[in-house]
Image (cartoon, rainbow, N blue to C red; front, side, top):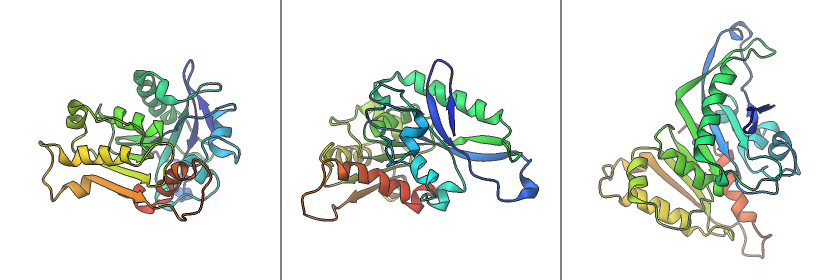
Length: 251
């Protein structure tokens, strides 16, 4: 369904269905996944762009959830919210970071105030709020993670082309980050994610080398064919692979 934060973002929202009728009326504390979309034309509503076949953002978890293609580790366990930059706007990356953080804080309070049709009340586990970012949204997710307000980050087709500032790397230490990127990406070169992961792993004040693999993961995708592909296909595919990965949502 779709919600609207007054004077701010609309968003597509997913709530797991209650599985036990005897427990439906009891508050349930669930982790939250915040999905940050990439750039798009964005001509329609949030619900259309995230869940309709012709939408701009159909390679992300909300679409897979709406079409019953998401892994159970996501669909049965997470509340998902995907803020939408708005009709006629290009990307969340262009938005003030404080505005996005304010939306997330508001959403937690809003969703907890709702009683759904099946009698369910939802409580968000504030210690388990994670980010899933695609393309420019992946770059945004890494920036937001430096606030240390989030449990973990999944990036797909990360697009920041320069080195991360040392202070940002310091603030990211200890935060689980799983990067997905295709070697065939023709929008943002795979070297963008290479540099991100390398900078996190090589930080001189970083974790013990034997523990790093538990914190930083990198799935580098190989294009399925050497034939000429549709432009942008591999860029989009990284987010689909990440969204369908069972382990991502149980990591």
